[in-house]
Image 1 (cartoon, helix red, strand yellow):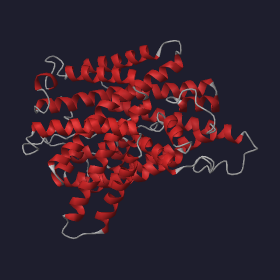
Image 2 (cartoon, rainbow, N blue to C red):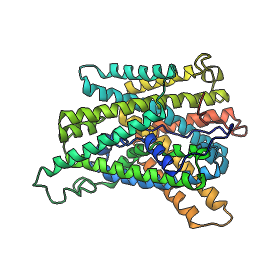
Image 3 (cartoon, rainbow, N blue to C red):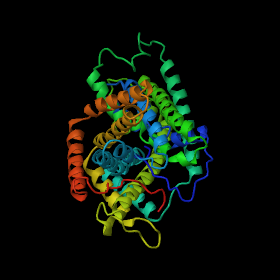
Image 4 (spheres, rainbow, N blue to C red):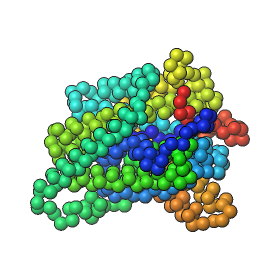
Length: 452
């Protein structure tokens, strides 16, 4: 799972423009991770009644429109790269604040769902150890590594992405061998992952799609590289769209193969790690452990990065006195790390991992993400159509389609996510209104510093 939200870019000193189009695309794929659809496969399958491919592809369409809006807004605000800035500048500071508060939810929930997933993956390796012990172990691991300032390098991340690609290729080959080893395939068998007349229900598919959005979380990070791109006006937009397209097609292939291997009517031993059990059915224990280990390593990396991202966002808000500065705006004098925030994010991840399911965590994260996506689409509509000197269809169609599809997916989230998310937003808006005198004073900042 890629890190949600956007990172502001420091303009002093000026960054070297060295990134071409393929550099940006590779960066986006590494951030999202090639294994992106695997963690949510089980929960999407249950919600969409087996139509995971359809859910992933519908989510891709929504993200493609939203990617166009992100790319265009990155062109309008090349040094900001933040959804809350786009909305606050183009529409209204209060709506920008709402978007930013949704970003906070994303940042805080990402390490939580990584903790849940790591604990469940570890139980596949050592089922005798209780889930709570594994959750405590991984929450402590992420917190400890971040407190000591241990980070993965870009080279390691690229190597991990390449390794994931190899594992995916192995899985696809083994899955194809498993499927075609059974010659008596029923009529329509190969089409059934897209549409099964016995189980298809549009509301269920849209509910699954609202979860499948997790597959694409992180694509907006490309917009933060505007000042390092050789041709940002062309390449940021193009790379953002292509990363969403490549991710969607690759994810579609992965879940299509998985659905062919595992019949819809057969329940998963564990819905959180369902893809791992699909691999085990297709190739046996060796493939189960290979996919399980790959996902575990990938999720540990995501957990570390997302917890640090949450700590940095809280630090930026504390530094600007948007939240109590004495706690959230403090840095450890020796390591220059927001130690209090790392501990806070780690504690929240542990408590959440012990009280809510992976599915509920994903839905809450997507609640905030979809609000941010709707905000960016609305900001793009205002900037490139309503305020444009010459109104064109290209400035109208993508943001309107992106906004409406994201709104539809948001509406189809589980009632729990909508209620809990709405409570979070109401509390945040109330707090923000008090702190800014009804949003008449300076807007609370949600920019994330790239380095501390």
